[in-house]
Amino acid sequence: MKKNVLLFFFIIGNVLYSQEEQKPFSIEADYFYGSILEHNPDIGHLITAHPEGFVLKYSFKTYGFNEWERRYNYPDWGFSFLYHGTKNETLGDLYGIYSHINWYFLNRYLRLSVGQGIAYATNPYDADSNYRNNAYGSHLLSTTYFQGSFIKENIWNGIGAYAGITLVHYSNGNLKAPNTSTNTLGFTLGVSYLIDAENFPEYIAGEETEKHTEPIRYNAAFRFGVAGSDVIGLGAEPFYIFSAYADKTLSRKSNVQLGAEVFFSTFLKEYINYRSIAYPEDNISGDEDYKRVGVFAGYELRFNKISTFVNLGFYAYYPYDFEGRVYNRLGLRRSFGESEKIFALANVRAHAAKAEALEFGIGYRF
Image 1 (cartoon, helix red, strand yellow):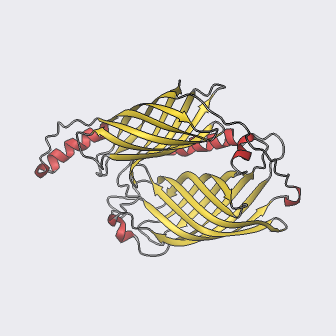
Image 2 (tube, helix red, strand yellow):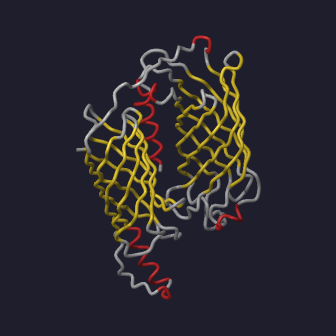
């Protein structure tokens, strides 16, 4: 989880922001008020009030100096700080730092934002002093926010305003139990200030005239990390995943994927043994195979040498039932070198909305 946000900061800072000339930027502040969603009945006792908080943002503005900026309608990227007051003593409050990216639509009146980072929870689970907090098992959490806003920039002397909705997610990715996690949906009001607005450069127009095509390419990837079950006290164990997949380029922006992989999740071996002893009525021998084999399809969206991807998979070999046979991934990929054959990966793998693990990996595209 900690490596996830550090990798994200490194990628954004060293790849997306490669401009050598003008570097316009803006600052923003917004307030949100909402509710914690009951995505799991186990957290019902923690939903007692309406959380509120604020977000501070520092965004670098693009205007088409690099080709990828023109391709994606001149997005912004930058860093943000979020304070989340849960209004619940058991949960405590949360403080998060993020890297974010903003996309614009409808003549730049609609903005969609995604932030990924790390948060500090002030009052996580403790067996003696805070046993009711089954949402956060650790002080440090992985956090993501999604924000959709109607925005008008530079209304007067660089000052703008926006309003919309924000969804904030917190989880430690099963690094430490418990990890039921929370999702807060809130309404947002904010103001923005474009620094030196009168000297903002003209947008550089540009359109691709030739269709970009590539033959089918083949990839091999090795993912790893540490994860545990939801049983408090069992701890976390290392896991390893070997993947092979093909991808077909659709355009300079995206490709589709199809592949297979094998999972070696050693925490599952310990969990099977625990269940066989603690719940004899389940008729578990304890010798069930903990390995799994999955097949998956995916979609990848590219930004220069960085891309984001989603996978939807199915465990074809599934000797022990754990969280269901269907899984999904959401993550980042970073290519290296002129040929871009070597790449690094960071992603979350989940079963529906329940995360199993934060995965990190390396790979090669043939």
